Length: 357
Image (cartoon, rainbow, N blue to C red):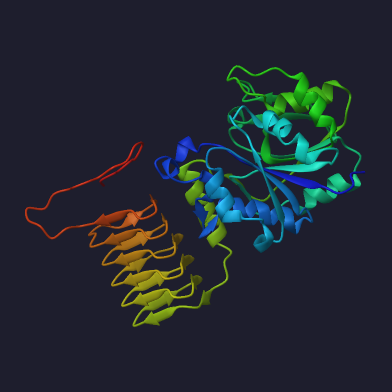
């Protein structure tokens, strides 16, 4: 039975699928319902009783360290572990061996969200006798994931992105290990993409005759590495928010579950929840529709926004069509000018996408 558990949160990825946002920001700090994705994972670990947490970081380490600090505000103790190159999940485990030492641990991918947290997973591991416990979920497209084959209550085979999947049970981004994983991670070779794959390390555990158990989750799980998944995660979190008003509402209509944070002002506008309006934001002569997350310092004026995430200090003004299903970066401006003749004028960063509908 594992003794004290440590946590290992992986936050070193480059976030190429969320560019251009991640050209200037760590993907794990992009907010869902106005909270960085990374914080959901750290809080899930804390709520499961795991508070001594190593955070594996890469090139964005300064930003992540500034956001999390020593972890005390989140009820954890954070230790930062530098991974010089993103050479795979099993490589991250080996990079953290000095921190983990002889402790069993939870490994959590920092850009993942799970509705029901990980307390049930941790409890199963604490009371069981397995050398590894992997979280699985049934998915419609298992060929896109690492897939597990089961024999009763044991995992007997793992295959990374199989062309012909033997099951629909995909690995969710949460794993539990005893220190036996270190020997297996050291024994495997890099995959075709040059990485030490955690699926290969777990398969090595199985081949050694060690016990790997499954934990199948039924609540939603999201990898927030792509825009569509980020918006869907935002929708799922907003679906369960409790309304609160700590700001100012003047001559406006607020419908449904809406959180208005301190210092936010809503003037001559309509806000239809579920939605969150961040601290110090201004919504004036505007409409904010369902599944919108308006971050701190944002201005929405004479415009309509729905099913979108607007990051801190961005502005959407004088736009005569609804902004929807969008992710607007920090400090960005979307504005219709007054000049005639009317035309489009853009300053667009690398890897941006603009759709004119």
